[in-house]
Length: 255
Image (cartoon, rainbow, N blue to C red; front, side, top):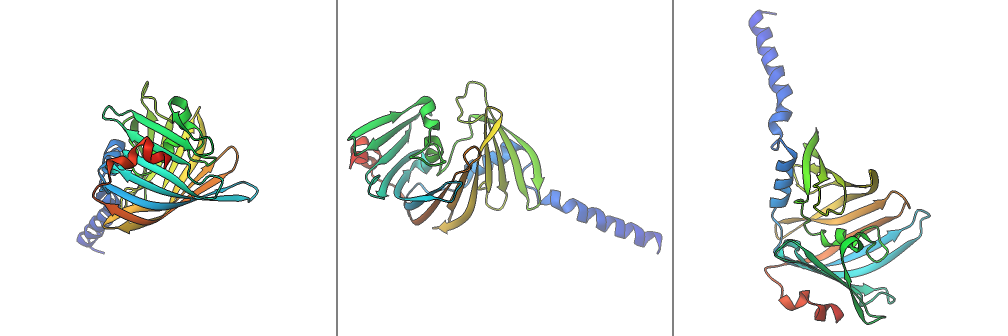
């Protein structure tokens, strides 16, 4: 083999070895998170969700909900449609201009609206593995409370980002570890840490495209301590340009 041929082969090998790096668009955790936040999202939408709560022993409970969102997730209303013992219950979350969020729960059996504030937002959402705050962030959570570090880039590429809560930010979790495929910029897996321990893991198992928007259609949250798993399946999605302001009010929550 001549010297020129050897040099040509070496050049081809170097190009091949460097191609994965060239395919990687983002170099830092902040760049990945910024791209996630900039991903196109519907201004408003209405959908139906099925929530299935499964215990470690295999028992399950299914609930049907309708959900309205506006402002790319800043306003959200959830109303339970079934089963009978929870029908009419609801949850309202509205984010103010200063970044604070007002969260209300309506329980028709008590004819009472309860405000969810502070650490209560981390409590279980109607017995599920999702917290009230998790539900508020379903259609587009904020990452402003976290510092983001790119820990690894897996083939795909898939970015592994560790997000650590900023001091005094009041973030729900101390750390999040996200696996984010570049192709979708939707996290395929999120680990939630509190008190230095892994609390739960969420995966997006399926997606759907509606009017050009890529949306999660099946999410699964697994709690480490009790071994329970909650699956949310979203269907009958209608993308809207806007929704009436009256939907995101306490009066509508009580209906």
